[in-house]
Image (cartoon, rainbow, N blue to C red; front, side, top):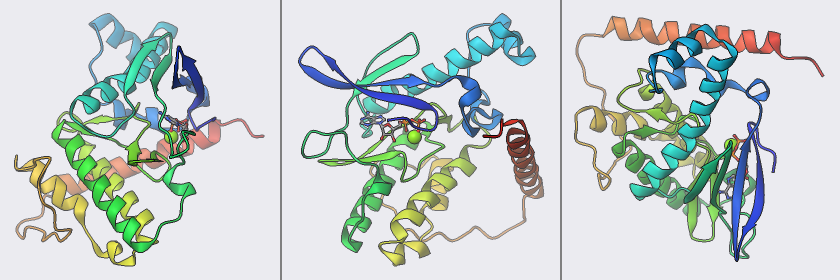
Length: 261
Ligand SMILES: Nc1ncnc2c1ncn2[C@@H]1O[C@H](COP(=O)(O)OP(=O)(O)O)[C@@H](O)[C@H]1O
Ligand SMILES: [Mg+2]
């Protein structure tokens, strides 16, 4: 399977079938290496940090290695926290070896967007995935690109994949915006099958609990969120506007530098 940013293969390891993910060249990739995602990620030393900032060849190699290892790091942390992600087995020379997520026949599992759901199924999977988002946030991680394209439907329920852009919830200033987007993507997708979901506001509720230190993996969510009344944080509003402007400028730059077919 060739995804947006990687080639993924079914491979055999002894008696076991597994999945190998090989990242595409950085220049063939899309938006997710944007600064928003990598803000505050730690690298090894100041020489590497300087090289990354200058964009030298060495710097680009360091950026690339950091990007790839971010996915395997996130997988280990999330698997340890009990989140339903593929179990990672190894990461070597830019190849990530992990569990193959399978359907009832043992074939590679479909993505959510390849499946149609009854309203009950949609409600059930939506609730399951919100719990997973919750558990991820309790482990300090926001997915950052969660959607029907990055969730597989395994024989025993949804499994979350594709985490190189995963964001540090506490250290990244864009974490809230990304969490809201992730949760809204799930709402939009499952809302097609169970329209009452479209009226829910779980993202704000989850983030408010997290920010107050009260989020637990077993927290019960209502989907209703009452915004605190009080003075508007104008600085925050202005930062959001600046972020949106920077993101749009980066998008235009990417479009203009992309070779035409
Ligand atoms: N562990 C896995 N088990 C089964 N299929 C997988 C697994 N990981 C990825 N895939 C398949 O490969 C596709 C691309 O992988 P993904 O990690 O989403 O990379 P990309 O960045 O290219 O979107 C997925 O949409 C999915 O169909
Ligand atoms: Mg993907």
